[in-house]
Amino acid sequence: MEKIKTLYKKHEEIIVYLIVGVLTTIVAWGAKFGANALFFHNTMYPTPFENGVLSTVNWTAGVIFAYFTNRRFVFKSKEPMRKEAPKFVLSRVSTWVLDAVAMMALTAMNINLVVATLITAVLVTIANYVFSKIFVFNKKKIQ
Image (spheres, rainbow, N blue to C red):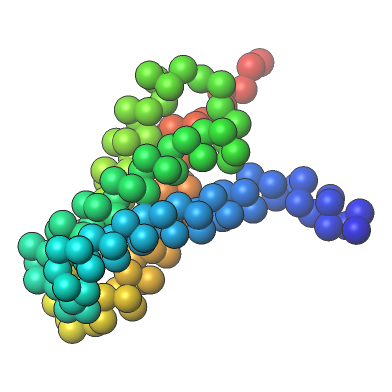
């Protein structure tokens, strides 16, 4: 048990980021597939327009949930939200573009919506962590 606690403490930020990431994904995908059911009759092969709408719904739900959970539980930030939130949104805009372009490319190659969503989720998760760690929630060391 002590080894597990030590391992957790050593890698706490990444472990909590992954947990928050799973929760964010559930929220974002719930919104995406809910919108697909509501607006597009559960299509598994959306048009480029439908992809744009679904990616935007996915992104918006994910960003709202992720900002507050990353701020509080992952990076434990005490910085003013007015400084961090714009940087967070800007970093997520770049990964929204990545998601939208990848989804359009993958579904244009006739890859199923669910499979394409899983592929882009991995790419976006890695990019989001890097941006959050380096650009948004970077703790400046006091010398």
